[in-house]
Amino acid sequence: MSSAAATEQAALPAAPAAPPRPVRNYRRRARVLSVVKHTILILLSLVMIYPLIWLVVSSLKPNDEIFTNLSIFTTDLTLDNYIDGWDAQGLPFSQFLLNSAILSLGAILGNLISCSLAAYAFARLRFRGRNLFFAIMLGTIMLPFHVVLVPQFVIFRELGWLETFLPLIVPKFLATDAFFVFLMVQFIRGLPKEIFEAARIDGAGHPRIFAQITLPLMTPALATTAIFTFIWTWGDFFGPLIYLRTRDNFPVSIALKGFVDAQSSSNYGAMFAMSVVSLIPLFLAFLIGQKYLVKGIATTGIK
Image (cartoon, rainbow, N blue to C red; front, side, top):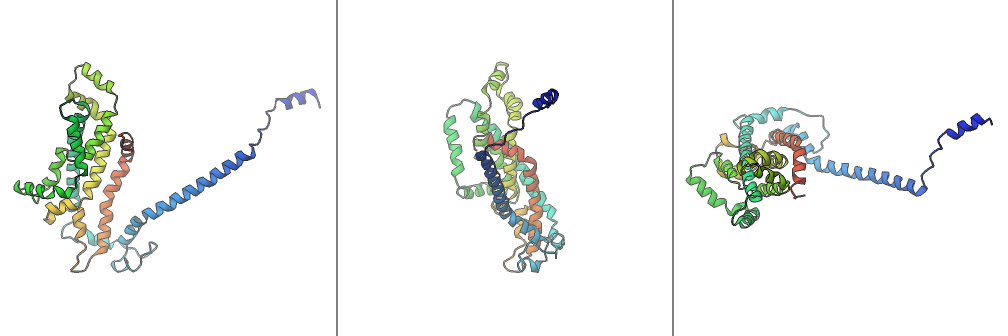
């Protein structure tokens, strides 16, 4: 072998040594465990989402096949349930969607304003009895809604608010949802105190600090409050059932009950179809605010 060839061969990089057998076995086991774990998660996800899939498929079936053919694999699909269900209540279903939207937007606006103000007061203001009031506020979380139902009904009846949206919206402007107050308090307490101290040194008062510093930093907590309020208000059945008795004021939760009648035939196909329609806003709200929802919960100490 010539010296040039020997020099060229010596300059070539050495082939990487094969990893030891224990390392190869560990990697193989890790890949197998990962495949098994993801397979189990996918199967569990299918089990969890099966009722929703069955609801969507049933909304496309003829009424007489919904409970006779429980399979989700069928070719006899129709949109008749959506067409019939839209006007089956004597009013277009858009009226019920609008009522639910009014209730939800009013509740969201009330919670964002009142709960953020109350949370800032508990987190940043120093006043006598603050800890006591905060403990009482937290205690209301454990208070069942049915305990105050009758007194609230009497008050709203005396005010002449029955058959209106006021009993379902006005309390939201009074920071009655202690859960959201607690969530925002935890978030504000996690913000750096130096920001508020610097604002005070620059001469900013509490209204300016709250409006220009605290609120912009509270975007994840505010988004979390808005999403949860929307979901809970949109699906609320008991509150509208107590205060609303006129069909024109029914939200979707009450309107869907009208498809089922114990004394006559029930239109389950139309009910399933309108249930799918009423779930679309919830799905869109969660899809749009998912990032803020996860961030808000992760940064408020409730994880």
